[in-house]
Length: 85
Image (spheres, rainbow, N blue to C red):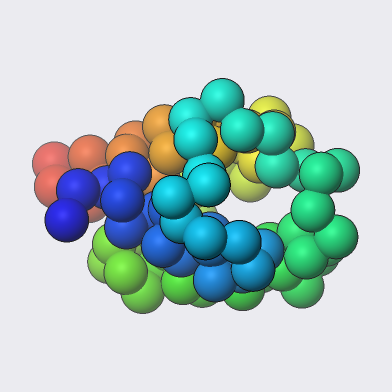
């Protein structure tokens, strides 16, 4: 399973929608009540566990959580940091 598919599965569990409904340009923050501060922390902990990345390597700005593709890019950047360390 690739990064996008894994991230879709994680996000689908947090926001309670089918993973098939998650697309790259999908807006996140402000669109789903589940993505409040606790939801974002849950999402980050699941990402950290699934991808073996350090949460500190993920850009925690609002831009990261603006859409699925910006979140995916940030996660892939953290994965690359881990692989090159």
